Image 1 (cartoon, one colour):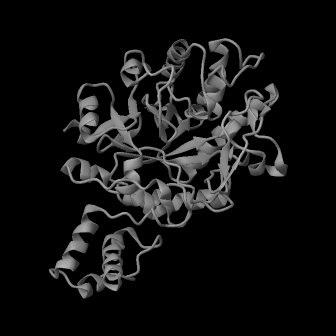
Image 2 (image 1 turned 180 degrees about the horizontal axis):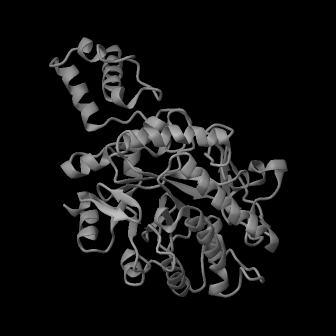
Image 3 (image 1 turned 90 degrees about the vertical axis):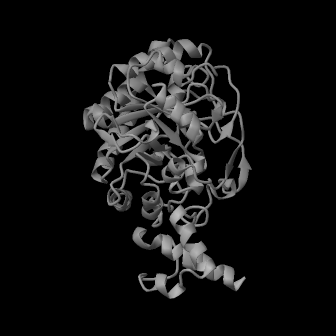
Length: 411
């Protein structure tokens, strides 16, 4: 199956074409330092040809929720380095998704209670959840023209920090109604300076970010994610087909490592219909000559068909990767997939994060239950029989099986 053949995206040599999509998990600490369990979480998923990290904020200004990780302090960089080392120890590849949430932030998340920043002072229409409470979205502050160079620089510095943390490259988050996307679409950008008005003007911010980041890392280690059909967070454009055709022309000039597109029917973490459902990976492939990753409710069969047809170079999986850490192994074996648990997507702690079993972990548990393997056999090779986020990758499957077996016996 071509889905499991190698491919190359710029400088990234993938061993298969299954990509871990960027998944917000909200496990970082109040200083935006990734969880101590993050190295195990990402190592468990390193069978992917490429891992795209969860959205990682480029600055304190870019933070859009509680417990999101960042890439602007030494402490954040140091923790991310433990993650990249864990992935590389398994011969995996990982890029950092660089994120500024724009108007999706809130004064409660900003220093001094300042408004979030955006291209224009237009609020998201829907109320938002913060700390378990539903609160109104607020009107952001429109960035002054003279400030934009500083934000562009923040992307470049974060990209440099990502390489310092051991990432193999970066993906710019240009999707789902965050800052880059907000500049592109006229439902959120009504500026009258050089960054607003015409389609060409609205692509200027994206162009400047691409110039800054590729100038820092080289084009071969930079990707971009877009979601042309998504209306998540009140996104809309009056002429989406005209806009996105021009965006593709701009991006093609940079010959990026990859363009990562969210297929129609997916809006944030929800399903939907939109005014631009015709802008799918096939539409983009007809207009974009570069390397293409697609995401959005793919199955093993539909992913294989898309790759075989040459419609995409690789396929990203999101929700299924939360509950199936060894998803590429399961897809290739046509093994049963564990359904995801939405209630644990964004909660703090290890539950629903690192405690989903692999096929090997499930096999060890069955052997314990059948008596074909004894507890002492597994325990003899473990530094600790208690499973948790600090368990090493080499021991986690046995530790998980022992912990689950003993819990069953005690029930």
